[in-house]
Image (cartoon, rainbow, N blue to C red):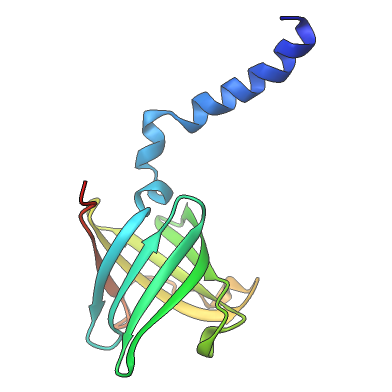
Amino acid sequence: MNARTAVRILPICAGLAIACTPGDATTPERLLIGTWRGGNPTRGSMAFTFEPDGSAIWVVDLPTGPDTMRIAYEASAAEGDLLIDLSGFDHGPLAGLTMYGRAAFDGTDSLRIDFEPGPAGESGGRPPDLTSSDVVTLIREASGG
């Protein structure tokens, strides 16, 4: 291996080592991955499945039947909570909007979450805390394996 090859390979190996550290699985963003089910009296029942690639499925039970939305999400730990932005809605009243969310884990298998819709790039309408009656409690679904 010559010096030029080593210079190209070492950053890749270092990146893989960082990406695969055991602590990575416990970050709030990584803990979100999986299927979560729950609801509340004002919002009804729903389920989210968050994938590692930033895609998600949101199923909302409506009086007319379930509505399934394939969307994108971004999650980051900030302000003492987990901030979650849902986008890519292609139908219904959320088409073209972003749902700005705030969430907090209660352990690793329970999540309280609240969202407010707004134009893309304008997160100013994000719920300021998790005290609203619109907060939904979700429970992690067992992985089955």
